[in-house]
Length: 83
Image (cartoon, rainbow, N blue to C red; front, side, top):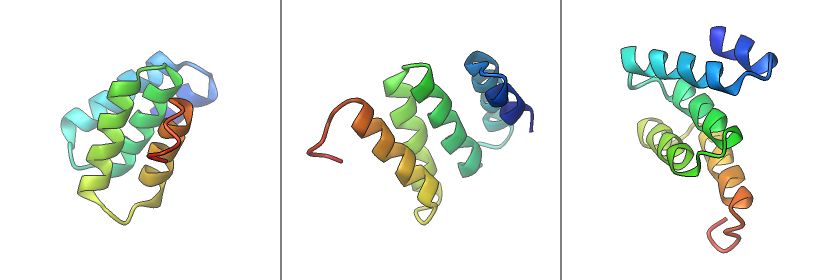
């Protein structure tokens, strides 16, 4: 909830910090990893976003938002072949 509050306030740094704390306590939280990837994407931290989306997909290969986030990342970096 705290991460979503930061997201609504357009505070990407706060959102990332909150999500990193959540993942430190529960590294298998694929929803938090996906949200972290989205936060990294907003902050233009491309490598970190790719890692977060990849980890979320490894944990739960059927979680569609992780794939959608990875697709948004590929579109943002203009890697249309991979997308």
